[in-house]
Length: 203
Image 1 (cartoon, rainbow, N blue to C red):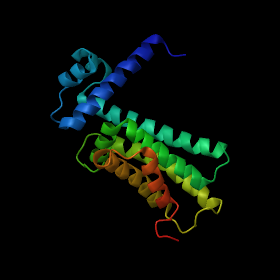
Image 2: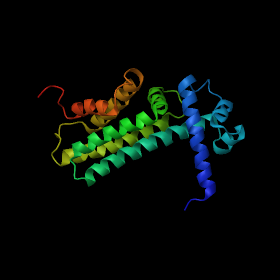
Image 3: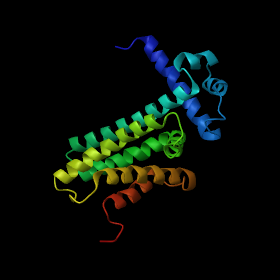
Image 4: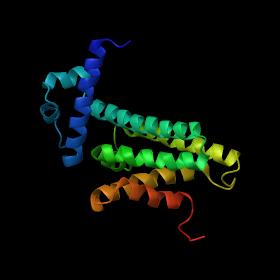
């Protein structure tokens, strides 16, 4: 069982992550100061340094934490679908829904993650690639099973298809948040579901 000290520290870290992610999404990493993160989180500046050695370490842990939450929700969606006796393609569909729900809940984090993914000169690049691969690997596993069970063609390129599905959800969800916020998650999910099932071509 976790001690109350551990739980309190996790709660503090959570507050710092939320403060950092919104500030960095608003004004960029370089322009955000530790003072501002502490102020936004409602804690003393020393608390930030007690939990993280530096702003860079805070950001690295934030990325790890956020993508970790996404990975867990994708895995849970696939497992729940399997328990219901669903097909692998239905599991992928549930994962799309879970991805959209995650992005709906953490839009600032998602924006930040997508922006950072394409920068190459960052201290946290290797961490980012590792956590990205963990999220994509969950999708790869389900695709591999779907090919193995004959649900999907053996011709599919699993790593690229997994990356494409994750990318589709990320970009479509950010587009939804930024430009089509009046649409419901159900509408966005059903549009992506059609793509997944290959029904856009009208066959």
